[in-house]
Image 1 (cartoon, one colour):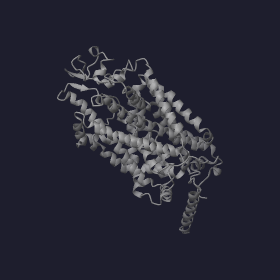
Image 2: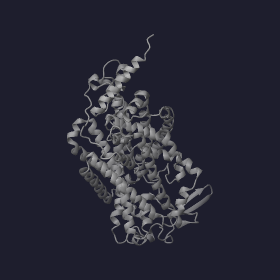
Image 3: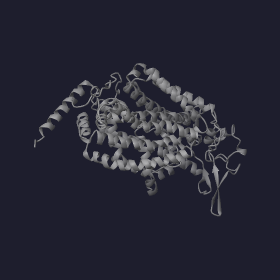
Image 4: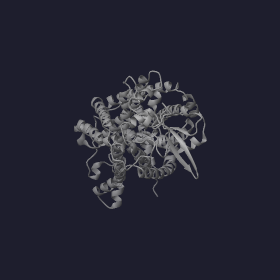
Length: 595
């Protein structure tokens, strides 16, 4: 036997979960990965990146696809599909680096803690869409907002002058800020939130009980989904229909938004070539690429572990990449149309600005209130956003749970307790984001992805293509798929992709430091606990594994880096794999010419 087993190291051998199940249909893997692109917090404007780019600004995405997105996705899929394990146990490939799997667990939880915001906001607008008069319509605004004493809105720009002063040397400019009723309605639930000013860190914490109720409702829905669809086949079927319905509703809303004033102009500008946007896309689309692997980085590894052993992950990786960019483009076009709809209110005015914050989630409700059948379209649009959020949340929880069950045999007999315990724990932690500080500063956690994912991708390339080895990787993937992994892809991954990832890692460190310097202290503490400390667990786990081994330091290190129990789980494929290794070893010995 040419691979090392746990018996050789004196440790407990890996015990595969034979009841973990498979996807009902091979395409369920595709839909699950499409769902990763529905993580829409990247469309919420941050201080450093903007995503209202035209279609030509997406061109760098295509370059990233060839350089490293598709090849790295193949590596992720290979690790999961070959080992039939989640993102912890898959590092049997090189046990010294198994800490990367535990980091993925914490990164996923870091996202889940705040992401319920993106389910609660659509739920807020959905519930209130049943009112005869929408509260964020110009007519409904009068019932709860005192316009004569408040801010200028698009409903009446003559009641007050809400100017923002800007000075440039000796010249002072004044700009009229026009507020949107739907954004004001969101703020109405937080008395201390001021959308036109930089968030005040000195403000006391204010808990919105309305949002507490919405968060509880969101997590109750998540718990119900896992109660009904906990089995792999059922969950895959659930994701398949959820993603299909979400995309159908997105296309339906896109078609309806075409009739908004200024929407066609926005669509035209979206399609218009622009060199400045293309340059901006070099950095911005890279963040979209990072999201292709899920919030916790290891999502694709876990999802691919439910594939059949011979699934063509090479073709699927290309399909997934093009499917995800289609989703980004569709939401980008919707965002463009909404922006130009609001700009139509101030056309020709250079001293007026419409404050269209969170265009897809908050500002969109104002545009919907101007349509015919506004209640119906509001419900349809925000149902689509709610479904997108639930897809992301449930997929990430599913990958974490299965990875824990694969690694810890003792948890398999308590799956229900572990599942609802995890959901309940995340739900309690998420209540911080029902406060005025949490609802504003969550973006600091979302931008940590730039740093963490770049670092983990670099380590993955080191583990698979240098420590495990290029030849062994190509041998294994050829055995699994019956087709080779092109050498030019390996060359790019070994020598070109790391350069890009190092640059992005440095940018990520800068962005994270700057973002957290303007953020809440509690969010900073969360980031340290859920991102920084877990990353330190990578060398920490490696040192612990060295301690369990025997021999000199160098012998221990080489042993802990070698693959352990690395073989297909299914007995038929395992036997063929062992035969393949034996034949390969015999061929190698016969080709050795004695001196």
